[in-house]
Image (cartoon, rainbow, N blue to C red; front, side):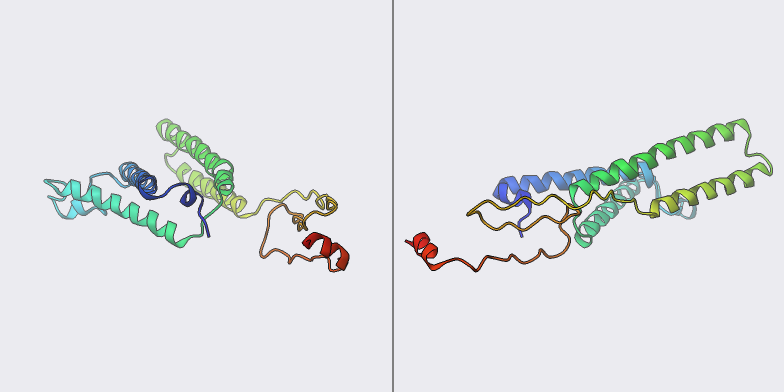
Length: 199
């Protein structure tokens, strides 16, 4: 089995390629730690139990511990999940992640304005939380329902050229699923033709 860049890069180029990839992984882990895990602050409300948790060299240790946790998760996922095709990643990003992030921006902005306007005062808060939960359930169900694939019918079959090599037909779906069908060769070749080819 050959992985694309393994054929073009070797030695120091291969090392630099992977070094850049792992530097990117560390950078993304540091950004995720800063944005989502509280950065240098002690995790799990340790600072409420231990007063000196965010003093001295501890913030550096907390930060690098969280970064190493993210790097561990990256390597764990890369080693355990099958490799997806690039077009699957692009479809996932464009069709799923971008709409979710745009919708999340709208939801957060709406809740910020509603909180500042006092919409969540009193009994209204329960109503809006139930409405938001129902809307979230609808989106999750929509996410789980697979998209219908357009059926274009059978693919056109090109007749083989005279004297050409046998080529198996492409599957109708456009993508190979499972093992390919075995090739079938003609067996009605005359001995005189075989002598001419070998001679």
